[in-house]
Length: 327
Image 1 (spheres, one colour):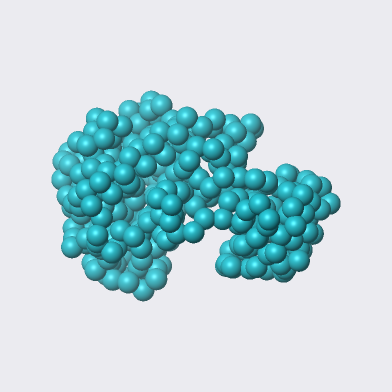
Image 2 (cartoon, rainbow, N blue to C red; image 1 turned 60 degrees about the vertical axis):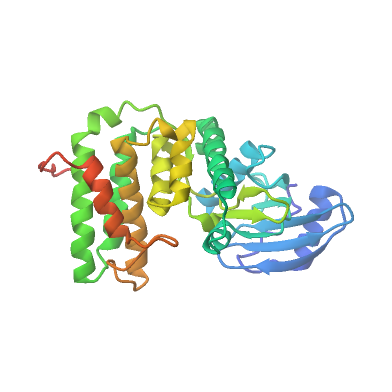
């Protein structure tokens, strides 16, 4: 493929560029139409054999495109992501992925209609169970690169909390107070459990499990469509992410009933991770102008802060602890 992809700046690809790309990569003549912009460009390419989705990554996002392309290569054929037909190499001028084109709606749109049956919820819960199990089996070096070292899990958590705290510093004073209390709670738990968390068996896991990042297809499948956010760490962290969005719902009950999750259903780390995820979501929301006390998960009567209080009652019942200066 080297030389077949124009080294054009972000936002300047045309349908003709994509048609030439598909001719070179697939040996197939297609008619391409731009259907999505933003960070990256997405084209619909209709050929005689099938219809493709062509994602052209913006330049300057090497970490994002490398992660997404690696995950597509590692999980293609698993049934959890779209089938991959061609992808760029490091020598191509621009990075791209050519996948199947799939009709459907976001899982969040489907969930918000409020008409899921118990069978629908079980199917969604089983998808996440299987998807996370497959991710946990991925080769960490293949995803991160052979020269990348695997960091101790507490170090990764501390960096994550520090990053969120830096973003939260822009919040209004009243919001900053509530976020600061949550930050202190998270730091206290991490400090107290540092040595134990340093011994967990780390696996590859997706860490942005917002239902908007999954597609409910017209043929009844569920597919992960946003593949740029992965960590290597405690597999329970992913369950905490899910819990943060659906706790108190029938779907959460279905999740926690599955064998992969049931062993962790009362684990304090899971609810600590749910609080970390909530801290991240709340910080994002207040930076968008929302009131921290009003933000709720999807279709949930409780606010994130209400739910965090429930998580805290589970994982943070050990009093105060001095935080060291190296935070």
